[in-house]
Structures are given as structure tokens and as C-alpha cells.
Image 1 (cartoon, rainbow, N blue to C red):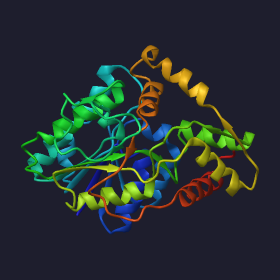
Image 2: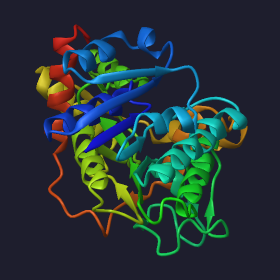
Image 3: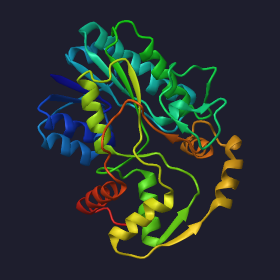
Image 4: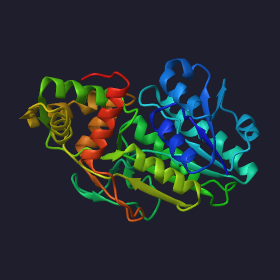
Length: 322
């Protein structure tokens, strides 16, 4: 079986490639031309596994179809930009992958985000949220950030597609942690650990080990979740829990500092934040403070201790120092 990972030159992509390759599948990584220079370590690692790397100037249906995939994993995503840029990444280019897969009779697995759920009207902040029975009814689900808005639009495009004949699934991960996780938030957590400060937000952070998501993508590629959308969140720690675990494993003492007044002040500024900024998405999730669960995914999640351990080992091996 041939798995095509579209947008695979990224943090989740490299982990998904490892998982699929380890299961004996043929894997093709598709990226935009120039992305290999921005992510040289990921590119080198993918090549070291002997996987095919296909760099395209534009993601068009005919080029994706020519790859002859049995499964197309769509991982393309951005966290900042204009509404037009968000729609291009999360909706328009997804349509190209859907068209290619439909003509081949292939399956599409769309990596959305927990932010696609948005605010659920009539549900109080802090409530537990499972997969909705009616897919993202726009009269029920309200979005503030462009990220959540366009991820939801991408989900609806896939949900309403006829050419796939039901061979599609949607995976909504929370914040990813684990190998290759050197995103800005994890750089910040490492910096806080080095300063021995663990800010206590009094808010949940929807978290999941990236290896758990990679396994879910492989299962989705086998058709296990066809016609379904799943919330992929394993834990809901406070920021202080994450940083204190880092401090524990780094064998340093950290001071837990409550910052609820600062969080409250930041949330009051949400209406002033550009809707296309990552801060807008972060404040939207913090203000909702939902606990995301899944009725569909039945599995043993990797714990926070293992997730932090795997991240710190990767950081050490690649010379990333707190």
C-alpha cells in the first residue's frame, strides 16, 4: 500500500513517515519546493530512511494523482496569515488532494485541529466536549480565529465530498509533544525550565504525544475511521505541569508561580488580536478551556512523563539546549 503524506516536511509529517515506514508501507513525502532548505534536519532524516521525497512548485490534483497513492494524508497547515492564506492551505489545496484521490479510488486522511470545534453555543467554558453527532453545524459552532474557522471549512469540504465515496476521515489533534517538537511553544517551555519558573495558568492545554497521532493516522489510512471525525487529545495539563515535568527530568528545581491575573488580562485583549495570528488561536482555546475527549478512539495514551522524556531526548540528540 502506498501512502502519500502531503505536507510531510514538518513535525507531524516526519513522525507519521516513521510510523508508516515501520509498518512496511511505501511512503512518499510531498512538500513545497524550498521547504527542504527551511527544514534540513527533517529532510535529511526522511532521506536516511530511504523514503521518496517529492518537491512540487504547486500542489495540483494532476501532480498528486501521478504519485498513484492508495492513501493521501493531508498535513498542510499554517498558524498565521490572512484569511485567504488560511483558506488556501486548509481548504483549497485540500480540494486538490480530494480530487486526485477520488479519481484513483484512494482514501484521504485530513489532519485538522481541535480548534476546528470552536465555541459550542450553549456549552459553558470548561465543559467536556466529545465528537459532535452532526458534523460542525455552523449554527452551533462559532469560530474566532482564522485557524479554527478554516480547519472547520476544510472538514466540511471533506465531509461533503462525493468523489471519495466515504473513504475519508478527520483527525483533530491537540498540541503535539515528542520528537521533532521544536516549535515556538516548546522553545518557550524549555526556556522557562532553564529559568526554573513554572507559570500556573489555571487553564487546560489540550495535549497529545505526536507518536500517538502518527499511529492514529496509520489506522485511519487502513480505513478504521472511514466517515468519522475524531478528537485526538490525551491529556489536559496546566502549563505548570509541563514545565515542572521538564524540570524534574532535567533535575532542577522549579518554582510554580500563579499567573491567573495575567491570563485574565490577556483574555480581555482577545477582541483586539488579529484573527490570523497564533495568539488569537491560543486565546480562543484558553478562553473556552474545554476538556476534549473521544467516544471513538479507544487506546492507551502515552503519558505526559514519556512525552516530555521523548522530547528532551530528541532535543539533546540534536543539540537543542534549554
